[in-house]
Image (cartoon, rainbow, N blue to C red; front, side, top):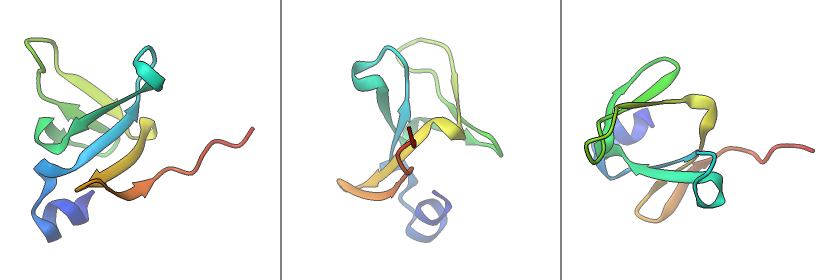
Length: 79
């Protein structure tokens, strides 16, 4: 994520896919432009459609994409 932000300068184009129970397929995606702050353990999102700010813990991030290419993907959980 830092490489996309500092080296490529394209953090706003980054697509962050994270686990979200109840969403279709239990995942949701957000663009980097919706991220207000990146902290040690969380991604803090801006208010979306008049809702509340949301914090996503790092362990729920499952994939990072840029221009429809997967940059990083969490290894699948072992049964």
